[in-house]
Figure 1 (spheres, rainbow over the protein chains, first blue to last red):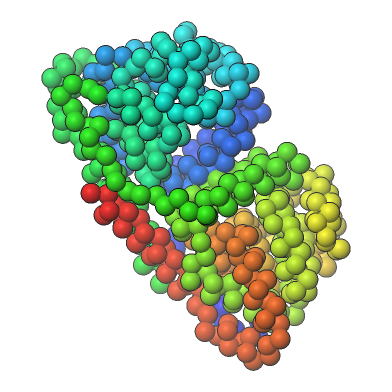
Figure 2: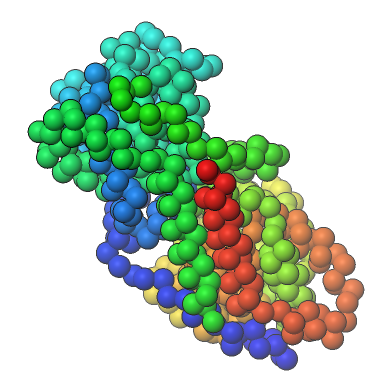
Length: 264
Length: 264
């Protein structure tokens, strides 16, 4: 210690809970690193995963009530849609291939590989990866239609995302989310950052970790696919995405304030 | 849009400011990816960088007042110390090699390479990288002393971190920060997460992005190295790390609440 300075005695006494979820986070991290090694996840994808980790930490690494509401609305929207699709990128394919496939089957919504950092080789590897995990049909090779945005990211398959009226995206970029909405589609976005352009532009913003969100949505889909169109519509009528985002932000903020106050 | 549902009309109107800092963040990201390609940064380091990006986003990607106070106290502590050292890992070496070297010279504090995911080859590559950027002396090869923690991460050089009484760490792990403090050293930590164990255990917690923090500390060191021991001590006497951490948390929380309120 430095002479005359009591700095070392002023220990901050905030406890960071060591609970099961932390082990989940290490498991997800391993899957992402494995994904990089297998050429499925890009380097940028690793950095994006870290960003998600930070936001999930702030959420308490659990599904908050607001996310449950959004997940339910997301399932309702996809069941009601004339045609739905699930957009898959490297991170999502690496983290939860089987859950994506199961949800795709329950909602009759095809999986389409759609990458921010695109390379045909990586698209092929992701398709192979999904097939290895049980997928029968995976779109994304054709790129024969275009979203109203610039560059490579505009290409989509005409029989997948392009014709869908409801699209489930996860860990997606804001430009594409905004473009899909502008085309009149409804975007259901899974994103851990409530402030991201994706979360802000989507019709339904699920602020939850991908695997947890998919688990919840699979359970909900099994039950909700037997509901009538009226019942599903009433789920959507009472859903307010603004309120969900606002409430989630306030929850995170209050959590931080509480930790700030506890530190004395 | 789905029939009967007005979800798409409820656009959330939060503005995320597009300002110069966002370009900085892309520059840092490029350096980290380059670092991975050069075998300096580990895959885990990429994920950690992402976590930092999220926290920096919440800070507004600028040096907050609390961080300036901490940077000033950190420089004072290192100037007052009988012996200081600067711990360097892959991420810090990739992001700001020249600033590390300049600060090391101004404070007469040797650079020591100290890795969480250790490999002798990576230590060598980081040393070579720093030398390429102008470093004359870089420690970290010997590992002939041990910190009071388990495993590979305990090894340090006897003439560097081990004998220092003030150690500057950046993007460091909580175990080692705590171990250094337990040994009676004062840790000055640069970490974007005010809730991390590193930030919580350090004597001085600089909640700021690495390059910004080093820039500030270089400017401060140039001026402060001409101050007397009494003047430096009075900087430390009036410094309260608990207050800095608490205040930073409240600042982030308030920022989130404001964004939540603005969204209607």
